[in-house]
Length: 469
Image (cartoon, rainbow, N blue to C red; front, side, top):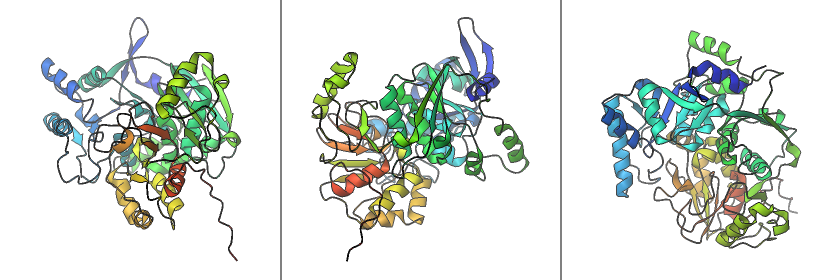
């Protein structure tokens, strides 16, 4: 009677500590330039080396520019963090995908696409959106800087075992509903604390119908509902996705790995601490109106009125509307937008760029819109060029930039100016997340494409245009 989480967790417990914590063995740690410097400095002070450097992988992503990557970053702090990461990895013998190299990109995009992320693993990173890797049937979660140091030193981390939760989505999704809409819908229903203290398994026919990249979007944003992480049981789609990737098992090792991976599922009689059910037919294209990912509504809907908001949440509701300069009861459709950002570890994969490009093909970008279309990795950039996506974007008035975290967060040159509105396919819409005073509206790549073309928030209609006579 074990859940998928139980099976992986129990296989990695080294020891149980009095008081409830476990010493958990970690199969892979990802690091980047922002949260690792203090951890390496801690090792130096202790006079110790990284215990298992081959199980750590680095890829700079947060601070790197998304144009002119052959030049040093303009910001002095960014330059220092990037050079420090390279120095630390060289000293400790850690694999690093340097800026400009063929495998560089956002760590949560690079891990799966290179085959470093595999089913049944425990994976950590000093980044909350490490939950992305759970889409391949992993226990993956973000950790703090002191814990990054702990894993570098021992390949283990102290963790209290979370509760388990399963979210089932049954039925058939509408054609214009993408994975981002699914997770924004779930968070709007359960709230930003709906998963607190839990590790969530996403299940049901609608989840099984999703591609691997769409599953990554779902697990990526599980953290935005307070969950410790999200995961999806591996299946034939997972195995097909991994087969032949650079760091995936090969030959006989692949067959052995496949035998183990096929046992990674929740038993039919497994009991979860909490279980929630949704119908796929109820999900529409979504957009946020406030300053947390739970403030989401369908694109053709209206901002709630105060009486529709729980009394305990009304103060933050009014504060969010004041920051966004919106009014209760406003319609979202038709509101003018200044910027569109497509990218991040949530929606910077090749399928996201394909969806965006397919929508804008044969159309033209609204003249007043500034659009940043940013691949999540060099591999995604390469695919976009080879598939003609870059040509389609340029014909419609867009530019394909170089990979990086970009406008997901204000840690590089891609910042949204104060007071400007940005429809973003990233994961957080907090005050100042994209720059001081920036106003962020989260949506999927289809909604971003429709908005970029029309210049205002637009419902993504995929029905064919009527014939002209």
